[in-house]
Amino acid sequence: MTHRTLILTRALLAGIFGGEGRTALVPLVFLATLSGLVAALVRAELPPFGITLVGLSLALALGALPLLGELAPLLRADPAAEWVGALPLRPRELRAARTLALGWVSGGIALATVAPFAVLARDLGLLERGALLGLAVVQAWAAAAVLLWLQRLLGERGEGLLTALQAALLVGVLVGLVAGLRHLPRLATLSGPNEALLALPSAWFAAVFAPAGGARTAGCALVALAGLLALATAALAPFPPAPRARPTRSALGWLLAPVRNLTERFFVRAEERASFHLVYAALPAERDFALRTWPLVLLPLAFLFLGADPETNEGRGLWVLLVFAPVAYLPFVLMHVPVSATPAARWIVDTAPLAREAELAGTRKALAVRFLLPLHAALGAVAAGFVDMEFALTLSPVAMAAGLVALRLLYRGSVAPPLGTAPDALGGAYGDGLAGSVLTVGMLASGLGLAAWRLLPGPGAAFGLLALVLLAEARPGPRVR
Image (cartoon, rainbow, N blue to C red; front, side, top):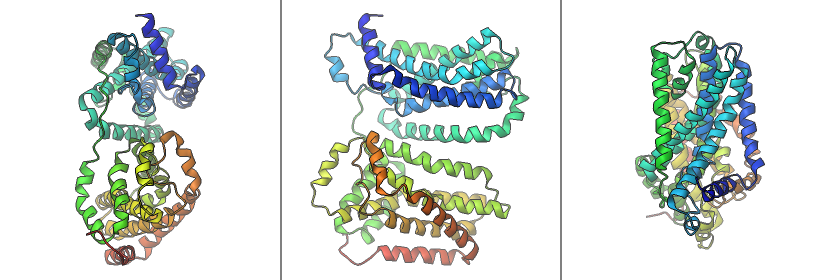
């Protein structure tokens, strides 16, 4: 360990947390407060294995989330690599500094999350409480090692997977905190992990607190392997190379290609073509748009899905709200259309002979094809599987039609232009009136959905309504050939 390594480690941490140590304490205090509330709720119900499992699971998820999001530079190529490369440093000192920074941050998050459980847990001795803190740190380092190897092995191909993983973790944490309370009595009866629980990495570490037996032995062996993985990763420091430009092709884009071509042929005017192509291809590739948008949409759907029983009228009413949820949350999506990791490239569009209304119209049509259509199709398929086909075919077309109308009414001249705002400056985009539309659009979408459920005679009327909306969009004018 050289003095230069320590200096570089401090510089890396200062760059991440804004140069002030107290800045790093704010999220740690928040994590400790959140986990303290959870620990206080479950401590009276759970034995040592149960409460350590909850604490370690929470630490695993809350530790992986920032490493995939705000703290992602710790796992990726250093954006200041060229500047650092000009310093009198050996390559191994740079790798050591990055490894230390990663270990320091991930370990600190783990300690902040698990410390309240170590303090509030019943029937744990002093050594066991200390062991819980140590296990949380080893788990965090092992998780960071897995994420690091994923990015190293998959490269740019893994961006979509990691984005989906972060969105799933966020939804899983929030929904799990609510749904998990239902299973506290069952978890209280477990003194150690069963075979199903051993599929959960945090159960390996919690198995240390289980009574002696095969499950504890298996858990301890897996913990040892996780520790070896963390040590090997620290020694090898497999940080990925600098990323190249990300491709905009995707499986969903390939599936939607026929719809995109039909939309260009019949709905997109010549002057709208540039913005249509730009937003259709570039916006889904923006990591910040995906991370800020999909959890906002999936989270309420996940909560709703937990209580939607299709066998009762009340449950079917919840399924109606589920099908119309994309319309209700459309303002949230539109708030994040301006976000881009490269806002400086916006000058290409700003200097082009492109009218403002034509750009907005092309953006609306791209959002309809790339966002609204697949989401409504997916929800319709889920509703057809869980409720019945007629229910889905009656409501999904109406929901799609409502989404198209809402898109035209909400995304107008006062909104920020697409792909022109840095993620950390997105707050200014909330002043365009969309935030105030959330409640109104949500109430109207819910009322329209319930009215369609009760009043429409069948799928024929629903598809007729959608056809009328599409015909209104296909107004006369020059078309793309």
